[in-house]
Image (cartoon, rainbow, N blue to C red):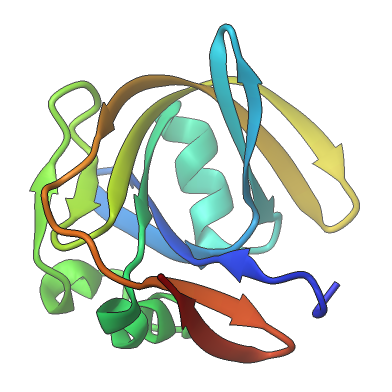
Length: 151
């Protein structure tokens, strides 16, 4: 699967009074009517319990300049408290979850179903809001274990 170039995102939620975030390249469009997307979340991660508890989540599609942000949210064992201090964000109007500033696009999502998938759970959700900021630039992608970009 490393030979499949994928866009890089940060998925966020809020649970137990804390923001939770993870880097994901497993965000996929599912349906246009209704507008559905999915994300695959490792069952042993903190994010797994948080996203299931919250029932809402956000997706920030990262630009090339956000590579350090991607690396931070991919770091296992990072502190829960203050993990978003390194990434400026705005709260989504539909869900209240953190949406990273300078992202190429944002989705706000409400979970509609979950499905076991080996050591992950597939979380499917309906898109409640879509934001496309004026900023545009190269997209951050991941291919063969390395970061890259496309225009």
